[in-house]
Length: 225
Image (tube, rainbow, N blue to C red):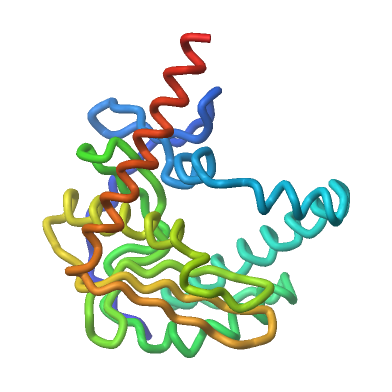
């Protein structure tokens, strides 16, 4: 059984507009989601090359399978950490969950699960996977799935996403996490763990600020034709 330390969860209205997914804060601000910001400002050259190589139809099928598998695993992680019974509806999701479960068993004192966060300083919002203690240290924890093992230099967007959650959680709850933990369940059954110490988060926040500025500039350019 996982212990939960209750935090007030701020309900945010989530909606879509021409600029992508957005959240409305309790005080009325409308901020883009962190996934929209990073998705709109990422280098898509490798993605376009892959789609050209395998074909649009096959690429769409692979992407849908990966999304379905990832969503199923996320639901299982949330249920498991919530001390809820687990579903076995998705075989691939269950397999990926088994890969990440050893890391989940090192988590306790859960603060937030699948909870909305926003930052007035960054003007971004999003839904964090988990804020909890892992190995007895408070962390922003992100659950990921992957077909193949990742090199650390490939996952800079993961670190920037988590750096946003780190910043927003501190802004909203005045509690400073000790680290960021990216947990990746790989299709071959292995588990990858990547960590950033709290003192090393600031450079990632600065990189994120550049991407946020790029996003808002693109929005302004669209408005101006």
